[in-house]
Length: 189
Image (tube, rainbow, N blue to C red; front, side, top):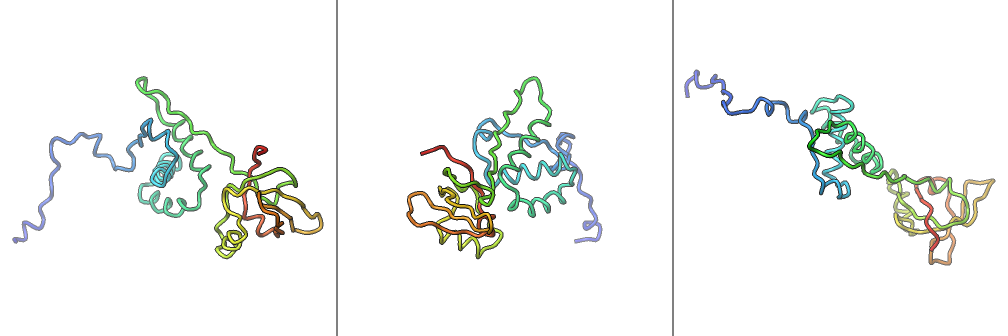
């Protein structure tokens, strides 16, 4: 190989559309009607986070990818849905395409600590910030989807008594455990 061959500059093919020469991360992100109807999966979360960081916050592609890695496990589904709705509302609509429907945003619920006594609730989220606490709650049968009732709140202490639906025994939880559980009221069964 000659020294001249090492310094050959590649040329651009003549049939490339100038619109396709933009960096990939600045191209508009499209979504089909079928994809809108499906729940947001892992790939959808990544796409929404990436698009939001670039289009709304002005990140570069590399910075957005790095930040997306940090955010994707810590951002709730409700926030991702709101980001998706923001992106849909701010994207230009052409006369040939109908506006994209907005996904309904589910309320995140409230901490069990803030719940009042009486009425059935369902656990909608369990914090995974402390693995030992997560293990403790799982051993008590407190996981997402579990239905329970707050039986008693003690005003002079940070302890509450709950009862899991269908079980006779009552569980006493301190504020650390009840702060790790998010619940929503359910319709009477």
